[in-house]
Length: 343
Image (spheres, rainbow, N blue to C red):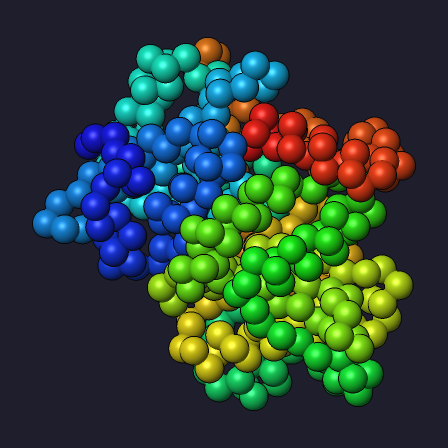
């Protein structure tokens, strides 16, 4: 077992591509986005034999004077399970990660995914996850949607809405305008545009993602960002103009993306994680006929040598009211300062 830097490992993404059930978050492309955007350091614990990944814990070291020095597998991802072929390999890697963390002065290590952890290891956070099976004709996928969802898609079509799938930086900038508005409505600052610029530079322009924009009279009223690698795709970000939501542009965007991925031969589309208490988003995702499962995160406190829980939600609290009252330029400034610390 050794520590590798995927950015310096020749052929890393080809190696990842040959590994079953592994998506975009394991690639050097995603690691490069995080490094260039926030300065995180990739330290991937791995065992590679005969050209195959036998074990992988992809860790990013986060150094913050505000939130402390720690490792996350991996920041700003919904799920990034440890890859292992035998439970004993995971147990050994867990101990190696702990020793590495103590040597480097980490406060804790966070895993975003529960693979390998025993039932007695309490999760730090728990979410719902939804994954849609695309390995069938588009009409079969459409038929699996909730009836109200199918009606909403047809409503958007009758309203004359049009969806375009783009890979230009300009289209991503149009999405970002919507993203900033939606984040403010949720009482949260947006990620800095430099993050999206790096996302475009390292992933979208390389053919591993696109921006979906829903247009009304040539004006974008909703948008989403999708990423993909191998046979797996993920719905990463979504935003829309509140005053146009009655036209159901988000439903049409999702359907056009699903149809695109079906036609291209992708096998799954992850709709990402959902907080247990976010009933509105949960209802939206349940309408697509996706498999619903529980997603667990684990956080290990290295000083206390115990698993710990996050007692408070990262997304809800007194700060939401403050952020909703801020002008978007102020929120963008806050986001540019904040995100490298929260990981």
